[in-house]
Figure 1: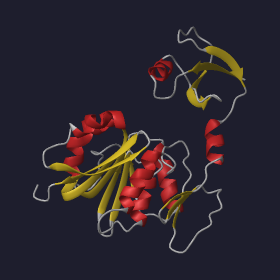
Figure 2: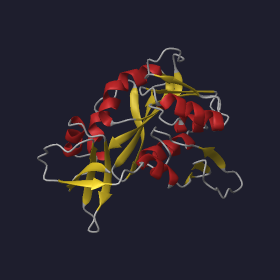
Figure 3: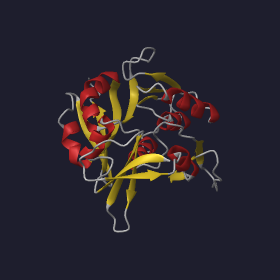
Length: 267
């Protein structure tokens, strides 16, 4: 059994969630009541005094990651299908199937931000054939693997979490992908100097901080697809656009945005 603090009316994006992490929470799970009210479950090693108006419960210990992965279904975006290894896929002519197990990393195609990033790569004018691609915050490696499958000449993925690199490398190997992954960010050693396409599924404030580095890494005429941006934080990103970059496309799914920018061909 484990100690669970149940807080009704809060979710994973709330201020309470951030405070619970700081107070030693071991994990957060979101639920919804029958009336549609969000409930946040915070797992602790031992009960502590908390002043958020929640209640303590004892619950059976559950491997939420294993449970989540077992319930993953294939995701289809156009002719691209992303499927976990245990799934049975009904393929049709022309389908491009990526087999992917997330491990502890983010990025399966189910979340709106990942789906929008995949759609943006699929919609690249003229396709990705012959182009170089960098995936910043690569997680499972999905976006980089898809870029490679779509014909990119060279594809790299970087992530500041070292635990994701072996997950992504394993997923690339099972899909016979040539993608190379490294621990780090845009400045990771060993990367080529410039790229035709950069994709990053992070969050608005980090995009704001990294935007000058994104622009510096792009070839003239290159494109950067930025997602993980809450609609309410759109201006955090758009106000940080460096000189020589312009917004060329915008997508929205629910409360999330993907913003695509192009670098001036003369820069």
